[in-house]
Structure formats: C-alpha cells, structure tokens
Image: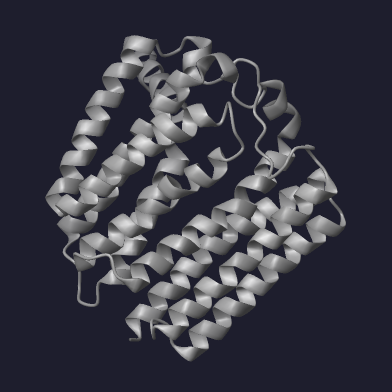
Length: 295
C-alpha cells in the first residue's frame, strides 16, 4: 500500500510539473532545434550532439515557461484555461518553482554550450526576451506578439548554427519563416480565447476591436508574408524546384484556410485555422529535411 501511495504521489507531482513547464510545447520547441540542426548539416550527425541540442532546448524552454507562470500567476487565476496551473492551485510553491528554473536553466545552457557556444548565447537571449520582455509586455501592448515571435523562432536558428557555425542567408530565411508563421497561428488562438484574454487585461489581436472583421483580415493577410521567404529560399538555391512548388502549394492552402476564416470570422473557423497552422509548420520542416537529404 505504501509503495502504491508513493507511486501515485510521484505521478501526481510529474503531472503538475508537466503543467508548470508546458511539457508538450517544450518537446515541440526542442524538436524544432533538432530540425534546424539537420537542415544545416549534410553529413551524418553524432547522437551526442543531437541529444545536447534536444535536452538543452527542452530545459531552457521549460525555464522560460516557469518564469512566465511566476510572472502571470495573478492573471492566470482569472482565466478558465489557466486557472488549474500548479502555481495558481498551490500544487507547486513559488520557492520550489524558482529552484526548478535555476536548475533547468543552468543545465540546459550547459548542454547547449557543449554543443555550440553560439547556440548557448542565442538560447540565453531567447530566454531573456521571452521571459522578461515578451511576458510583461503582453499586459501593456499588442506589439508583444511581434516581440514574442522572435524567441519563438530562435530554436530553428539555434539548431542550424550548431550544425554550420554561422548565421548565413538560409539561416535568416528559416528564422523569418518561423517568425512569420507565428502571426496567423497566434492570432487565431487570440481570437478563440479573446473573451478570457480581455478579461485578464490582455489585448492581443492585431488592432483594437476584439473579434472583428478587420482582425480576421489582418490574420489572413499575414499568411502572404510567407511566400517571399519561400521564394528567397529558392532564389539562394536552398530548395530543389520540386520542393519549392510543393511549399508554395502548402502555403497557398494555409492562406486559403485563413481566407475562409476572414470570410466567416467565427470561433469555429478560427479553430480550423489554428489546427491547420499547427500541422503546416512541422510538415514544412519535414519537407525541408527531405530537400536537404537530396542535395
């Protein structure tokens, strides 16, 4: 009975920590760094380097999310989607969370430094921007979305720089692709949860007006920003011509879903756009990996 109780206690703590660090998001971000690494590397990679990038990226991202929840604890209490977070419920105490963030950040940055000092420096900048610029800025300006898109896109740059040791034209294009993808992705989320965001004091849509046709239009138009980046990747000979047209087609489909949302600006169509955006990015990354394999 005692062992069973201990197991349930450990399992409960693990579940609470998953909420604290946003486990699934951390995994996605870490995998994005690994994608970036393989996009910059042509020969077979050593497993230890891949592990360092993945583990380091995971831990640093987890640190950013802990700081985010520490700063926004009082605001999280006001929203249905965040009121069960462990700092709000008291399942994890503030002191414990602070200890965890120091352990995670130091270990994560150490791993990344072992993989590439440049990657560690970029990761540190990303952590500072997300936790201490984007997070507090959300409460005062909708421009925070543009600021937050930068640390949100740095993981793919971190992986690429680890592989190549430089920031070149493909690196910048891959970074911009990730930055610009976040605009329709996040604005669709902001549309879905608009009432709760505004109730907590956030105004995260492109312009004032909440769920307005104008905000749906800006969300749709933001998808067009992806096309020049894809063309640039082709222009610098990073893409095979077949891959170039496949990416154009996928981006057109993404834009079309955004257009449907604009023509019918409802929560249902916003959810569809958000889902398509979640599918779009990893599919694009996977195709880019295939492109590199065939170089």
